[in-house]
Image (cartoon, rainbow, N blue to C red; front, side, top):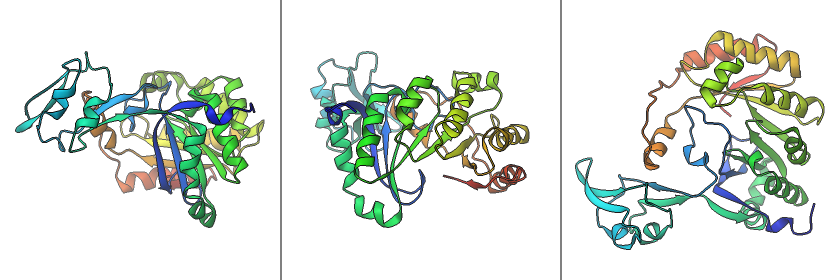
Length: 312
């Protein structure tokens, strides 16, 4: 590790405290911007790009016009939206400078993503060290995709280990073998996603095939000897068939090992409102899976002798 590793930077869009779904115990989860996948159902669309993005919330907007008054590019106007006067941002000329965010008195605007150093992020994580230590928790690095920022992620994990923290990574595993080897040497637990076992379908749903992903998962478990939990986002109509869940469980049981758990993460609609706040159209209308369906899929995983749970 270089002597200046604490000064390395990456775009961070959230440092979430008291996280209980991203590994054991109470954790702090660090979310980095930038992802090589484009999942149709993405729950964090503000994480896709590695650059800062303006998010607006019409429910909070009072139509006061303060944002329009300070916009240097005249990208913001106030007009009727949803039965009330509210701002409208022309994103084709908006530069995400953030002046409108500073001017807004109702916190109806924010910039998602800010370059932060390893030192700055670590300082935020360590504020919760008392709770982390007492609960057997730690720090989890997520995204977006943290493997898109390998130098920063490696340095942050190294710094956390130096402070005695348990480390975890939540990843789609779509990266070069060199990046995987660089980052995962400082990881105590890997939470690795499998979106679909059919590579052609995986590419349709996420924009990339899955061969690299599955190869990296095998490498992390067998060669790097890092404990792995497989996570499957359950998206009704896209990857929740009995056949796909069985294929995922078979991969975990036969290509990894019987001690690898499979967590089934039910789809939720939080990503829809985030897409709207980014000025994007919501084109998919997916039903949330029922409790009965989730239990059925869980039983399929367990039939392969694997531990399984619903949710992270």
